[in-house]
Image 1 (cartoon, rainbow, N blue to C red):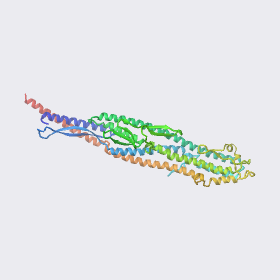
Image 2 (image 1 turned 45 degrees about the vertical axis):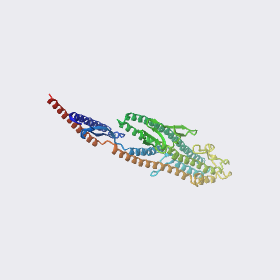
Image 3 (image 1 turned 90 degrees about the horizontal axis):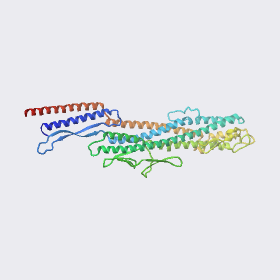
Image 4 (image 1 turned 120 degrees about the vertical axis):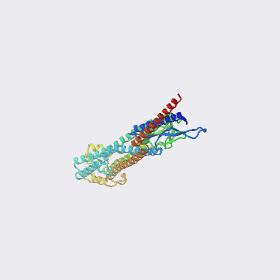
Length: 470
């Protein structure tokens, strides 16, 4: 560079660079409260004279690009943490629904909590059933005592039916949520492919960098990672590659796989990939949490509930069938049905309590020996309940469910703390600091003023030269 005009050109480039720095700083300040924004910095380099006939000399500055301050490794860690958080959140939401629907039905007990104050919990109804059994034993000829026992047995059976109904409703809700999450994932994958195309169009040729579009992509990837575990990498040609385990979901602007769902003969929702033979069994993210809840706590609770119903029928039916009613009839089951959904008090006994088989001999229709055997059987460990009494099996159900709820709550709290720490760490790197940006503003302002002053001085010098030539 040489001469006044060369210096004037240098001042012009400097002026443009400082102006661009001011624009970028203003853009940063405008996005100070945008959690998905990564601050940007102007990248510049010195211009050197390349004419070999003249000595090496600086020729000012030129803009090389606008750099986005972002730690991609930290972004990947946040994707992973959000998948775990989404898993636990989905699981906790389902357990909260289960707790709200079943808490008063089973006197829910959790670590650090007392029995629920529901008016009709299984434990309360079992106590009433046992009390009424003793009333019948004390006065086997009393019709009112018999009626009270039959009513309490009917209430307990209906309570078990209510448990099964709540479990069915939760299962239906989980299936509906699974479909909703799958549809949202497919929409997000489509948006991601379209966003990749937009980024490639802007950055084609390498002269520009689509920083704001890249911010939108990171934000979209975070939302996606809440629902599904993902792995993000960049191919040799610079295109983004998104995978779930071994399955490629998005490659650049190409949407490779989406989630397909169908209902089998048992009305169960099954998920698969549209263009990949790999099995789809989500273990993280909201989809994973829903699947884990359905195959874990929900399945276990249903199994335990059916065990309770079958155990109750097995224990009391065996003892009851050995007794005799007031009319001398025998062999009648107290309960009918095969599981919690179908357990009922025998309709004949429900309509006519005198058919309750209280006595041990047909010639003594009002003795209490068989009803006493029923009381003893109810308090004796049963093989049908895995060597437990009915009361012990009920306590195991409530305690296990309560512990699952509390453990999930604690795990979610711990995970949210970890995720928050990761986000704070990223914020310290990529976030906008008002103090720092204000310093940048002053720096660019002064540099702009100095560049303008340089142009003004050169302008005066050129004017003086023109005057001298007249």
